[in-house]
Image 1 (spheres, protein in one colour):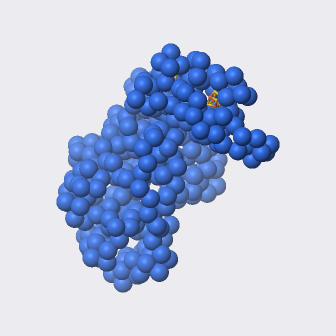
Image 2 (cartoon, helix red, strand yellow):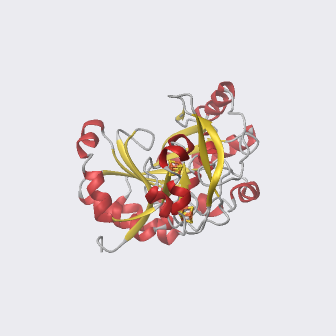
Image 3 (cartoon, helix red, strand yellow):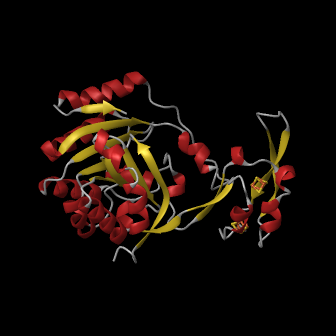
Length: 318
Ligand code: SF4
Ligand code: SF4
């Protein structure tokens, strides 16, 4: 089974300290049913592979004879824009990908030696991923860490995620699943025996606002959380604090009250203040500009943390 089931993955990151306890290796699966405008990994949203371009890696058309321009069978790359090279002070001629023409074939990425162009989203077998994770085993053992399966939404690739979690448990490795919780219960239920910790996002308690902003209602997410708690699952609840979306006292109070319903299943609530990292990452895959906001103040984050601690829930600001 593990030799045949394949997952579409956009990154495998070692030495991660943000995705559960200790030092971890995190496997990021591509594709998500939600469309959070603040997403810090916009390349994770689509299920299909995508051409990405990192301007700072591009050495300019003069240095590489415009290989990407000439290699594209669709004429989807044109000259466009310049940047100053920080080392030489020279102005470098950049390129521009015509997104409406490009079909993500990857010919240009193969021709781009500095990997300014690359295809985001590759297929791996479980065996291939396990090999990479097992190479980090000694770090897990010394730090109380393990492996985290993340996304996108890993539960959208249920067979791969289940098989990977099973293999990790069979190796005695601590497992965490970073999830939006937006999946059918039939899928969620299957991973419970192989998941030591759920890193579980709660974005808004008002389903209408949830749907308007991220594209799906919150009922399945809340329902799955309650059922998981009944089954004895353990949670780190994650709340991205997003200006003008969920940063009202009423919503944070309602979120804390929901966490109380999960009882001792909740190990900690992590409050994640909005940051604008996703804005520049978005430009790697699209010409469309995304809206930016100011991060919430420290005072506001502290006051939200106190809402949880007053109700007896351990909370941290991440
Ligand atoms: S994207 Fe790559 S191939 Fe194209 S100009 Fe930049 S460095 Fe050269
Ligand atoms: S991915 Fe293919 S179609 Fe798109 S720019 Fe590169 S070579 Fe052209």
